[in-house]
Length: 143
Image 1 (cartoon, rainbow, N blue to C red):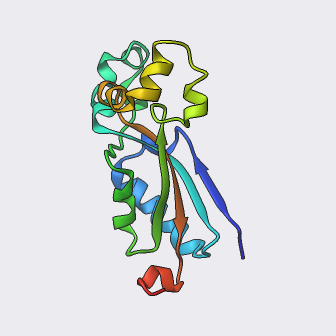
Image 2: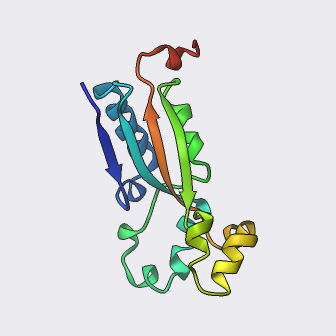
């Protein structure tokens, strides 16, 4: 048994959606233990589609660009028949207040008092924590 933790940062976002789904489902099938955690990032449509305008990415081959578009990290739950739950999702523009308070003006001020403005201006990049519910009563909806 577990606990098991799978971490993917700046890896899975380079795959097509079908391969991402297959990967997540394989983890759940092979590690159905309720102690299994998956930590991974997601990139939104605006970020994926805007790569040609990025000062860094526009100089790289399109084969090296992000492919998977995920505007709502909770969408991943829908692929799993109730066997995966999104526990937490954060981006750079919703840090804890004690961290935002240490960031210089104007960004620290904006992050503290107007985080929704920052999220509107910048594309959606999230770091997400998912918990595998496995074959427990939680996966069936019973408590």
